[in-house]
Image (tube, rainbow over all chains, first blue to last red; front, side, top):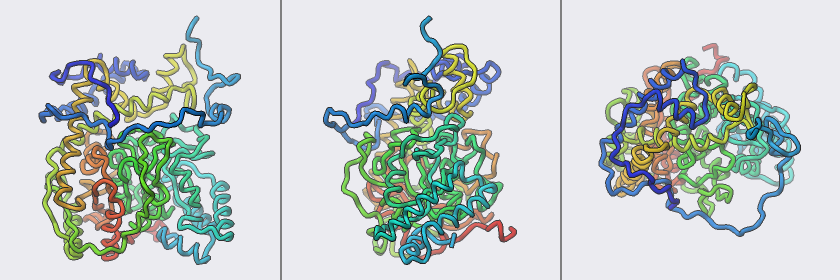
Length: 111
Length: 488
């Protein structure tokens, strides 16, 4: 069995609440997807309907059921602790948007 | 010649009736002539295809045979293929020439198959109509105003239109079986773990599985023989002895117990689909099969469960598209966060963004148990329903999709309607079971209907036997869509 993340929040009784505009904007921030102000309402409307459908999950009692993270009950394999990959950084960096001296270039993070 | 099945083409190559180069030219010519009409292919590289064909001809001349040696096939755009534009139907990967081969591509190359091109698909495999592709929709060869299904819509339409004798596909919630049904071809989603996911651009990793699409069950077996097998680069690839998936094709079906779930024949099933499936069941009875009623009481929850789990996994998998290591980067940005946000806003289409947002929300602080863990618990109940059903039967049958091909634009504006198109296929992915679709007739509009066969874990050979025996007794799988040169 591949382990699933242990529940951190004891919130199984949490009611399904109507999605708000703030929820959408927060998720968009977390997902690093820019949403323009004039898009947010349309996204909210569509996500709201999808969550309405998802609420059907509430109809069934799942107490005592073990969560199923994966289709097969298999153990993750172990392998020898050794180098298995050749250095191909030039090949892999050939498809990057911006590279200089083997480094991926991004905007400055620390001033 | 273009009407030959993959097996017949393979036999013609073995008998030296034609060369791989001739076969490859034939299909490339058809693609050049007809792709503008269907939009099945996103990338072609004719010189590369010809080089592979010449290599296959040389190998055959040197005595290296094998059923796929020199057979031209198409690959779904989701597979990385070295030197090929591998776009996954997305603007995000519209400039991505893969530096490596997916395991599936590598295995088919080793078997000597020739790559004709990369097919169109719903963006990141998220869709059931091929309308979410950045490269525009694929058209159904049976009705150019109708969708081919999705997400493997380009592969399905290419096989149906005889632009390729076979193609690879992937299936996370029905993406091989539903387009196979809507275009009148055959498609198989193997047991989860049978085919390696290495190099297959990830959508929902606990559900994604690759499989073959072709015109007959026999052809599916030939392709799956090459595609399946252990690969240490996929942590969920299963270590099992290699098998011949066509080994049981010729077995009779007398005494086979077919389970019909009551839930598959309830409200929402189009009458034209129901009558074709009923007729197929009657055909199986005449082949000596027994019909058993079974029930999958939690199947109705498979759509909501799927739309929690698949977006959750997708939101994590698609975090890698950040404009740093490959793919699209927004042309203008202020700082690093702005670069991420603009790159992802511009690079992803609306359906992909929708699913990333759903996934991000259900995994976020305070909602994890209520959505994600609850969905995983329901996933177990759905899988247990199948275990109980398989105690009473050998295979389960029903429709692949509740309707035949719908019109372009008909469901595109309503995600919920689109999601219900996979109501009979999603539960199979959640359980990790193998499922296939074969053509079993037409509705009143002359559009093809698919019969779904669901097997127990690792029973692909038995399912292919069940499909092949039906195809020996019927000819639905040989019907071709109207050819444009017919003037229709």
